[in-house]
Image 1 (cartoon, rainbow, N blue to C red):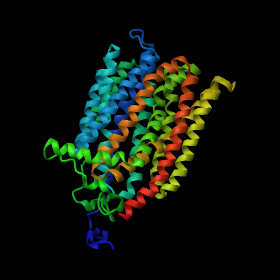
Image 2 (tube, one colour):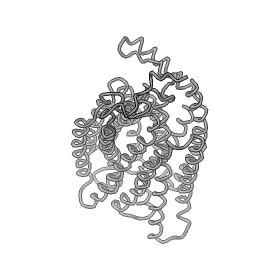
Image 3 (tube, rainbow, N blue to C red):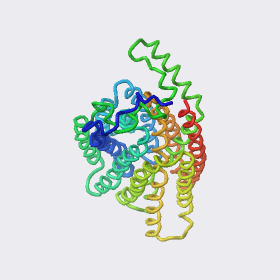
Length: 456
């Protein structure tokens, strides 16, 4: 029997209290902030070809790959720091500090002169950038009902694509008229404005829990929120021994879940596919003889496709059963695998330079359409549902493990690409197939997990 005493009061009895405009104002703040995070994330990649051509530096593909790899290592560390900080101090504070630090270190990256300086500043910039996603998980859990998580994540995921488009297409075009160091400084200056906007407009949680809207409150009456981890506490307010007990209770709970390991394996592969964008401008320049500016703008087809698909994908995800989602997302990853295979075959197709360029843009657009919903939505929704009050840490843990594997991959990827772009694409094709299988198994397994959670 349902305890009706815990049910929210109908909307008709709450005149003026449910204000969806407050929810979407909160989303708007996160949207602008995370878009800026992604501009700062991508701008070193956009300037990568120009850095390689800078006569004052001694940077080849192998060195550039290691710079990117150290940045990814920073992102791994930042996932843990940001997730724990969000659970402890809240999403707004963690997000604001992360954005401010990311701006500062991209500014330092722009004046670096040695490889170790590029590595250190990018490490710190991406460490701070990783505060964004766990912080948003906490804020979404405060503001929205569980059956709206997919669509909210879908909308916010487009901010990532908008930021990437601004960096690759907008700022990438500026490389034709300004030095790469000045371009980095321009991005850092825009980041300062975004920090001020976010800090002044975001609210951590609604004044009244009923502001999340009619129906089940966020983190409250929805059956998906009543999960075993809700009984696990970190013990922040007590001593360090209690904190260790919290870790001892939470981590075995995560690690004993088959679903945790399936989504982790899926994410490791999807993160590698996603960061193909790091090498796309270099690949297009080397194989199609495009200029630096042309290669950066052509690479914007990937985030443009992502922009469309994650927005639609979030709404679709909320309306599908997880078994249906398994089929849909597997189809998407099958198409993505086909895109990689086509890239592999392109040198043997005998096409003209213009035809190869057009085909590359089309493939990158389709690749973005197919990979992005699979990368963003299942993991983000799973983290809030499964993590409960510790969603910030769970989403950070998943991301950290995935990014750790990605950092290892890209540590060697530059050398592989330097030797042969064809070999690089063969490895990427293998990763895509493994991701397809694990994503399907994860979403099929979600059907049983959610049934158990609802019965509980």
